Image (cartoon, rainbow, N blue to C red):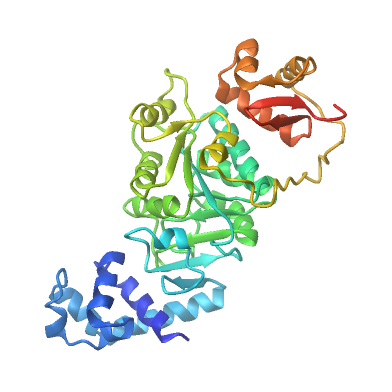
Length: 372
């Protein structure tokens, strides 16, 4: 057992000591161990440390609780990563209030691939869920880590899309890893942990209280190169995540929506306030960030629909392929001729791309795949 880790877990479990205060304590005392060796009189000289916190730092029960935490995590296959470890996410380490420790269930090294966050309202429309799922598929197929919060609506749709491509996706939780919230997403959480990660800064036993989720959201944004908001109401966690991302110098993107829908208000305002850039397809994110697919566009066909197999098309998909049969066409041209919003058309095009029917070219141009 690493003694540094034991002391860091102890620090993180003490109420009232957040990541910033914990680092200040370590800097003042010299090491995580020295924090617990320092006299109460000296601790009280540190700004922000009152008698109650000093007493907890001197209480042997604090260390015993951390020992139980470490032992339980070891039995349950939960890794504890401290900010001193080489595999602590480097993108999160660059934020001023990155967690002191992270609890992780799942095999992925969070430094292996860039993270793309996809977030939005719990009360998502069917169209919003479809777009989130398609975006999740698209980025996972290109070997990005799709990051979200496992919540109802947009979050779970993004995770599900990534899993369709057998890709890596990370769910950041607002509670301890000894539970899943909402419970109905337990099956999906298990799939995520098989190849990606369930992640939390909260000790085991922490309940999914409302106050935990804003803190959770700063981790989502901190892990990512960019945050994409698909649908968002006037208030809510997605807007908090977007603002955290903006403050952390991450790029923020938003999918515009119907002015008459409550779930479009947040995205449209992020764009209006110049916090987010407007996007209608995921390729725009890579173009804007000047990123290439991590493994040159790894595309994985689902077992039930191998690429090259005969596919069934919806009426809208058939109409779209009819336009493309006349030659390559740009997104705006197709949207105008089909009478669709670019965001809705992008979802259809992504579906055709995954079926192997359509290929996207540079400049938001599309063509029928060879043999179609």
